[in-house]
Image (cartoon, rainbow, N blue to C red; front, side, top):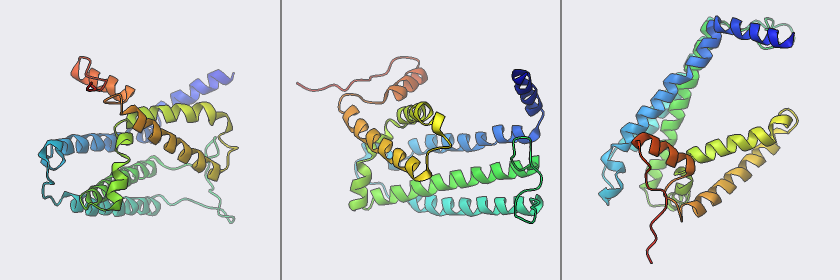
Length: 231
């Protein structure tokens, strides 16, 4: 039956090194984001109680390190193509395909692709963080525009979970039928709606719903949720 075939495929995937590499490979990137966030939260340059801007070279370090990581990620991807070249037919289509019609990439090649994604993901995040940090310290028009995104940054977990649910419920059945430009348009509309919601939400609450649950679990007690309005 179809159900037994699915179970057999799942059991085969448990012994497939390539599948394991795709599942485990995002862990270093996630751990890297977490460690970088914890380290940055302890930096005196980002302490809101410090008042005046603390001199620092970290924005430039983040920009150049991020660019270097991007180059390293591209080099890793090129190494994959050298060590595990893909065989193509006369029409340029892959020769070795899996039962799903996807190119059959060796486990080593999949691991290099995942490693490349880790380098480019961390590098891209560091570059954008450094660039944003530099703009915020320059007191320019871009800095004022970025300040307008601050409320959205305080409820990112809530927006991520909500947008994922919205896309799965509304776009899931039409995944292959909606043109790419329409998908971009829907994403921009959702981003604008989330930004408006964030500005309205922060007037009454200190954090988003998901952020409040996460912080309460972290502190093992309910943390303040509503803003204290003066009368």
